[in-house]
Length: 165
Image 1 (spheres, rainbow, N blue to C red):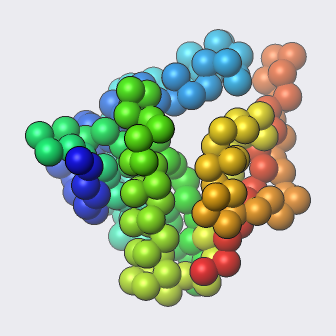
Image 2: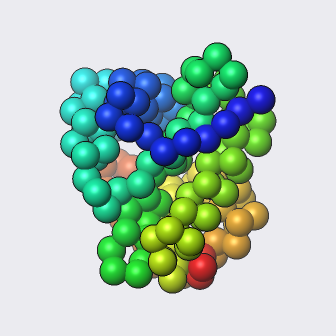
């Protein structure tokens, strides 16, 4: 059985660890290794999450099991009445168990009821078809906007997906 709750500063280490482990596993076949090595550093993730969790406009939810082991998280920020999901990661061994759905449900309820958001958006790697399929199940649709980054010989393309609330 898994549960969700709002993250606190005491969750920084767990969130950074999950972000590091999951990011590497998720993008192992989708991004060049040199890019992954450059962008995915555990100490940088620790520093980042210490800062992020202190920001009042950022809402982060964690998923944990009966032994209080944190296994995943989702984070979004609010600007005006629009919200954007910035991260949704689960440890690889906990994927496909419905935990991502629990996290997404927590964020959707929080964004619409507690934070008065009119829409929720996110950016996803265009080649991450399993993530795109997951988001589509919640009613997210591509709005045609994309962000391109050239890295060595690779073109990395993120697409934006939006869901009205």
